[in-house]
Length: 222
Image 1 (cartoon, rainbow, N blue to C red):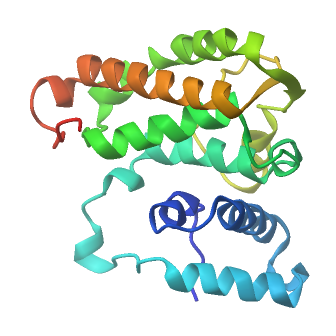
Image 2 (cartoon, rainbow, N blue to C red; image 1 turned 180 degrees about the vertical axis):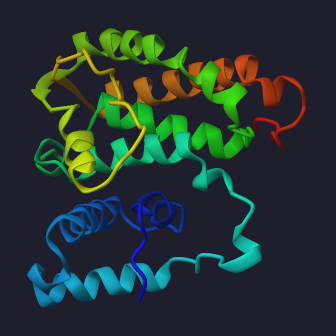
């Protein structure tokens, strides 16, 4: 079975898989990418096979020439960092009602992109740069209701660069060495998720040229 170059954890979530199983898939997928399937326990290999069998087949040949939203570099960049967080001990060891603010922020941005369906060509990705300071501000606002843990935001991309050449940048920029990882729980988590979903939707709808010019296939909000 051909192995995917990027984790497809978001697709398992869309298929209704439990969050715990999606986390396990992301962690095992990352481990296999680093060390190879031969180093996995038999039950873990079986779990990965079951997860990959549940995923829709990738298109090949002419049918695959037109990139889907999930194939676009910006979407994959967000998903890469989201998956790195899901696979990290800081997320693995959280209680069931907890989640890191950064992880939630990326999950919500990915969902908004799927809902709005921007083209994500160069004009959109240039405007997406404006989201970086907004992400920092939104997470900073969440800190008073959070417990602060630590996550190395630079490490996932550094590890990727050892294996392959990439033009991707660290999530928080090359020079940002802050490893503070706010974790929210319960009602505070729900409020944060709702707030950033609304703010991301407004920002993306109003600034991405393909949505303002009617090139995307945005669906009305419910």
